[in-house]
Amino acid sequence: MRRCLIMFAVALPLVWSSGAHALTPAPTGVRKVRIAVATFSHETCTFCPEPTGIPEWEYYGPPVRGPEVLKERGYIAGFVAAAAEYDGVELVGILSPRDSKGGSSGSWVTREAFEKYAGGIVDDIKQQGPFDGVYLALHGAMAVTGVPKPEAELVRRVRAAVGKIPIYVTLDLHANEDSELTDAADAVFIIKRYPHYDEALQGERALRVMLRQIRGSYRPTMATRKPGVLTPSVVQGTGTSPAMEIMERARIWEERRQDVYVSVAFGFAYADVPDIGATVMVLTNNDPGLAARIADDMSAFIWRKREEFAGKKLPKTKEGVALAIAAAKAGKTPVVIADQADRTGNSTHILEELIRQGASSFCIATISDPRAIEEIKAKANVGDTVTVSVGGYQDRFAGRPVRITGRVEALRAYERFPIVAVLRFGGGNRVILTPELHQVTDPDIFAALGIDLSTVDIIVLKSRVHFWRGFVEDGLAKAVFQVDAPGLGPADVTTIPYRNAPKDLYPLVRR
Ligand SMILES: [Zn+2]
Image 1 (cartoon, rainbow, N blue to C red):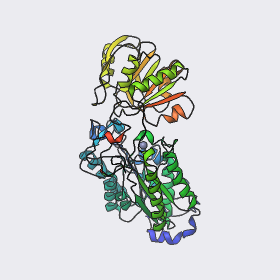
Image 2: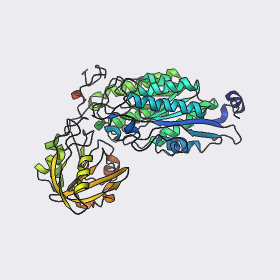
Image 3: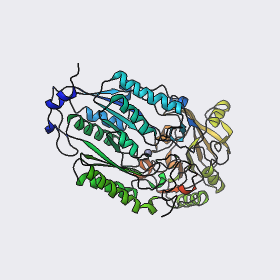
Image 4: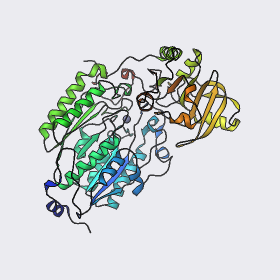
């Protein structure tokens, strides 16, 4: 049987840890620390048409539990790997829903789904407990019908079930949060990079600091600020400023002061929620004054950067496509067009414009269109020529369906999709059709579907920043154009018809 926490604290005095971010593993033979681990993660595009209910959450299977939870990539992988360095740390996977169908093209999470999984997490924690700590790998931009701040609500419910044990949360930097979350949780860690390279690192930090708290050498105190700045995802890439400068300032604070963790969420502009916009969360070791000072500094810095951070003028469809074609003709191939505003993945504006301007050797990766895939499957085999209408119907900005006569180049399973289709048409053009939104972030899909990228001049991706990892950072793309075609994720957030967002955010109100 487990011994009580007080006995444990006596057995292990404060010398157990050393330094801000480096810890000495626990001596052997200590009593077990049991930590519950769960994930419930969604980035909700509330302006998108299809709600995210239980069928969407369970499209890829029922929730996972036990060891399956601990096999999750990203945040949980970091948490698990760090825990393995210590003797006597037992992690217990708590019921966790899988990724939902359509991911962030999904609209409002239904109340029923939230109740089912939040309730399931709390019940499972009670059933598998008692625990010394709880780790929740969340996203932060979940929007639930009738639950204004779902992550804070989940933590409050877990708190009610477990009492005063550490509850730690990791978040995506697209989180929309405020002090309700930090009031409920002991500590929050947010990734600092977009593309999101540091998920495992933040999971690892959560584990190490939680163990210090359990063993008595860290008393988390947090300060949270809302700078009042709302930004579109397309300007949030941390390879460019001001996003890069903001995160660098956070890292400088972490290195200047021991035991300090500075988190910034840039926020997710496409969720119409009351805690939308940037958030600063600063964690210190029992130093609320320092937490407040750093949070004020970071918040003021983001405010000073508001004009360049809140938006930049991107080329519209016609201009962006013309620029891409000119770059391709100048030999800068492959050119990447990021169709950054398309949140459902079904938009045809760029496809139509490429055809209209006579482009050749382009590949649209991808258009979400389950109907077209079914039609192709019913009418044709690989190698056959088929005529189908593609895209242009899943949201009001998706444009028009585009009629294509082309040869079926591939019709096969790909990753989580049971079937995708590749149509080849015109002068070496291709469109890849997927059954739901698929954001291509690296070139793997082309090889998997038999597409030789050396024959492709223009690649069109439904991505804002994540494509940077596989197309820009390794030098593949010779030119990149982020294009603001019509879509539910516009670069100009002042065009978004918010109902629940505060009205005094910059740039909704200019100050
Ligand atoms: Zn994100």
